[in-house]
Length: 123
Image 1: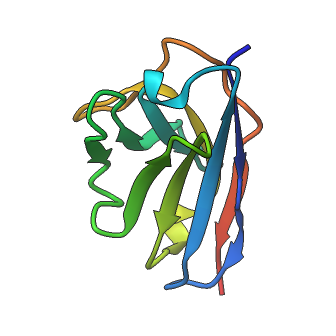
Image 2 (image 1 turned 90 degrees about the vertical axis):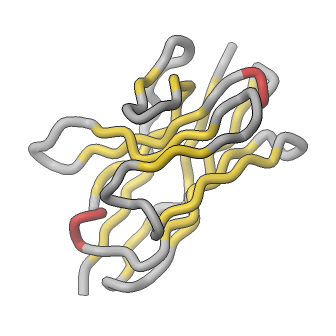
């Protein structure tokens, strides 16, 4: 069964950093593109970053470009999201899921949403 589990969230001050992890099980990680999404209270879920299965090309939402970095370790079956220069506006629950990478990051077509990991940026 295809499963992705997020971890690494927490409370951090503005300007700080966090690294999120997305651990895969039940499938070969590099068989799918993987996306990170986030949902803040009262807002719709949005695509943050994506790494393509074919050549590892990375994609970022304009709001995080230059601050977030997505990477993939196929041996560890884990996708990471390194988040630097965090802002209060980055506060959200972060999720990973298989995705279609592009200018717009679209979740699916396989897997389901997990519980996510909470990121809170506050002084």
